[in-house]
Length: 297
Image 1 (cartoon, rainbow, N blue to C red):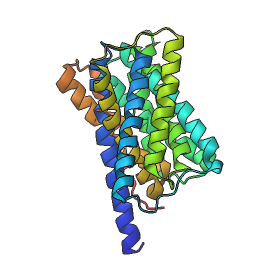
Image 2 (cartoon, helix red, strand yellow):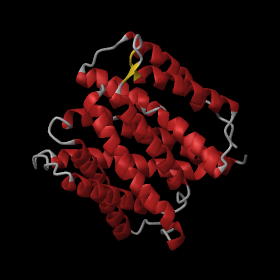
Image 3 (spheres, rainbow, N blue to C red):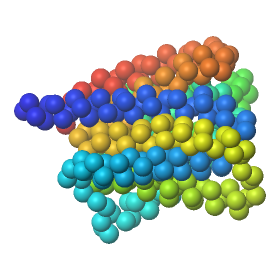
């Protein structure tokens, strides 16, 4: 690998990690804001904030003439764009309902299942290579997710909230691969379409189910969180996918749940259980094998 490609590869890793750090703030802060907003309204305004913020950045970029040579989306990209928007409507709705009934730290760790979903879909549908280390990471993350999903080991009852979080991860895993197929196009345009498309879609569903608007003073807070934790995160994630692919980007993104978990303990003061610690140790091992799977295939 020559020096230029090596530099691009390192920048892609940096963007993937930066995307993870920005997204990590969404778990504990969304949990707090859900006290004043319904799950579907939260999902809607999070994505609308992402779209509005990215649209403003795009307008500033155009006026300053630093747009560069970014390619715009074309008609052939429409199927992936539609799938991306639909999946992004479903995923945050599942997540917000899941957060209503499970701890934010638990939800943060369960978000690692997105690695599993993204990698397996990348393999089956898009024929990306998956190394032995990444397979081991997938197995460990899956085991940890099962532990976190079991609510009572004596009776094997399962947490509905955890299942909803895992459903969100499955949607995002498929969405990651759809985004990968158009990641060579302008990331600002992609995030703007994602934000407004998914946000308006979720808002329509919320209104059809007669959910009430949150108080107006909370809407700017939700949209700001959406811009930072969703908009900027997706923007950098898309850049990373250009160079290292969907499966590997999702593995570097694996640090997000751990940052989210730490923030949940600090901000929300959530209780730490033995099952959580056991699942955490397995998840850390899985994230280690995923993150240090450095074969530049």
